[in-house]
Amino acid sequence: MSASAIGEANGGVTDAIRSLPGKTVGLPAGPSRVGALIVNADDWGRDRETTDRALECVQRGAVSSVSAMVFMQDSERAAALAIGHGIDAGLHLNFTTAFSGIQVPGALSEQQDRLARYLRHKASRVVFHPGLIAPFEYVVAAQIQEYFRLYHARPERLDGHHHMHLCSNVVFTGLLPPGTIVRRNFSFRPGQKSVWNRLYRRSVDRALSRRHRLTDFFFSLDPLESPDHVRAILSLAKDFIVEVETHPISPREYAFLANRRLLRWDGDAPVAARYALAGASLPAQ
Image (cartoon, rainbow, N blue to C red):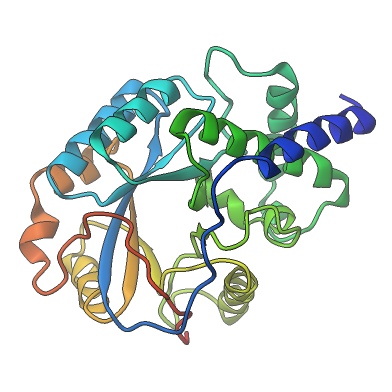
């Protein structure tokens, strides 16, 4: 697909996004110290089993919300389930796993494959590629438009498959709708990562915070072998807004959530019923 063709496609898709009805979510207010524990299941709609595992965890009260993939094998059914059950679903932008839906535009698959090949390189998250500005814009806009078709609303929350929404070509070109909730970088204690690694992550989070709403902290549910990991999360959630990423398709994570171990340990930080975020701030790290 030529650059001019991508530009024409971008114009059409982007114009369609701008014309979508609905208001933009407001920018964050001042800092909040009302704690919340948000447990979010990723990959909703990727395939039937992934959706069903996450749905069960939502119904058990162990998962607050989901991040929905579009143009995938189970995207249509997953959207109907989310709407029917009142499940809080954000958009899980996908640049790295081939779209598996039945009717995916050939140009979209072609450009996503181009991005996936680039993003395999370790430095691609940090290095800005000027030659991929148009493909990134096209692939993001197409997924936002498809989300609107499936969920009948603009996505108010966005994150990325394999966290690629944090790559430079997405963050520093402002591709994500302003005012939306966007997933931040993983939170680490001093010493867990190098100083330069933490400084870079902080700079990305600060860039995001100028246009988007962020939680105070973000962790993966793993490592489950250490109870101290979960207890530390629960302790923070008493005073801060904490998002925990989980993949119920993982047998270990599913067993943890289905057995409600997190609920037994939660104490004063119960799992939120939805992705509740009101004026979250950026904590010092």
